[in-house]
Image (cartoon, rainbow, N blue to C red):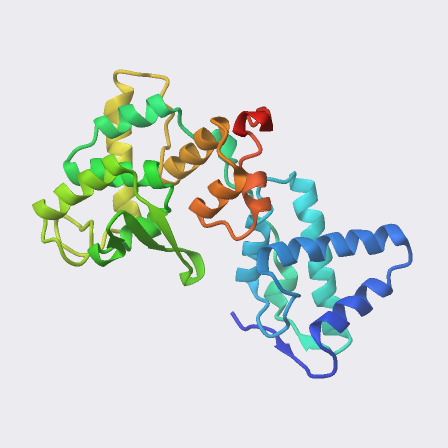
Length: 286
């Protein structure tokens, strides 16, 4: 898909200011500014005619997954109106695909995609092999994403710290709980101890996202035979949601959960995990 091409007549902030100024009412101006703030939360910059594409609009929509569908669609309409206006006045060229873009149905909210600690334990205990069990433990105890798990190498582990490479190639350092660290060391001795932490049994190469989810689904199916309340459709990301929800329910500060999960903005953490019960007195932490 071809990205838009910016001109040098006005910089992006000037274009955004001019677009807002053309609104006839203060309410509309405030509405436009609200959408731009949402964009800034997702990208930390003004809309850029050099880079806007369907991928950016998908990311923008995903950043609002915790919002009502009508609100997400309104913010998208506003941002697309900005691009269309800038295109019509020659400030930049926008591909027709961007202007035709529509939001797809959002994935199920995190509020419906998390497990109780008991369900997590049951699924992990039903793992097919040591590799699968340890992978699920890593997802549960560290809250890492499937892609982060699959990319881990033994060089990522330094004493009790694990360096994780997340979205946008951003890295973060996570403290590994002592019991998990002990199991990682045993796994290292049982395997080659070099290169990837977790490999395909067949090829010895990097695992696919499908392979990880299939291992989890297999374990969940076994666990469900003893506990019919375990939900279906469990994937790697459920473990991440489960850790964050349990941590917030037990009084973990939002900024700590944010840092561990690798969210750039605490508003993302608050939005995604709005279902968590945080009804605790701050005096409890004194």
